[in-house]
Image 1 (tube, rainbow, N blue to C red):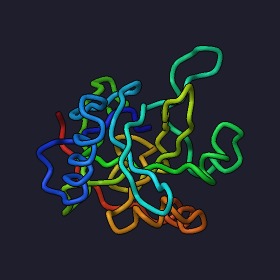
Image 2 (image 1 turned 90 degrees about the vertical axis):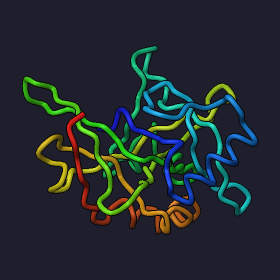
Image 3 (image 1 turned 30 degrees about the vertical axis):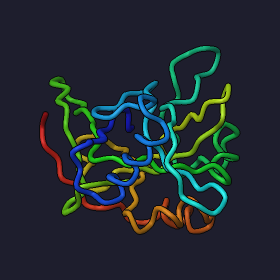
Image 4 (image 1 turned 180 degrees about the vertical axis):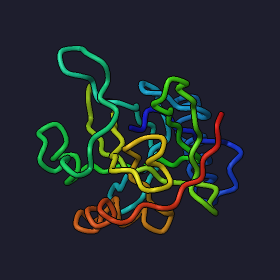
Length: 190
């Protein structure tokens, strides 16, 4: 599960700095930074007219019959699910982040912050829909790797900066990235 993540204005990552500058210029006051929650409008990156562009996007698809927001989609089955298949084929989004959060499933419910080892940024794979003239997204998840499994059995699908353009613009390559080995993560209790 990936229910919260962090997007820091203090990042030194070149792509994050570029995304922030473009968002501040085009959409001032229309997005949130810091710790991001379902329902928040946040910076996202999509492919549009052969360009990679940042846009404001809202975290979560409306749930069935007005229930809680859908915030994640299992990458292993998204191509088969009516709610996600069209978006996976043609409406992929990347959520730039500096970390994400997960809670332990023991009685303490300890909150952990995860980062990619030796990187100041990570790029979460998502898919989106236009709902009531608003871009809404869910984050793709996968089975957790060894650096995450002790805390949770699922983790977000994570890209490196150099993989962002291909994920957004090429469906077969996007599917390869979704199935590839996830990066090693570092965690700290918060």
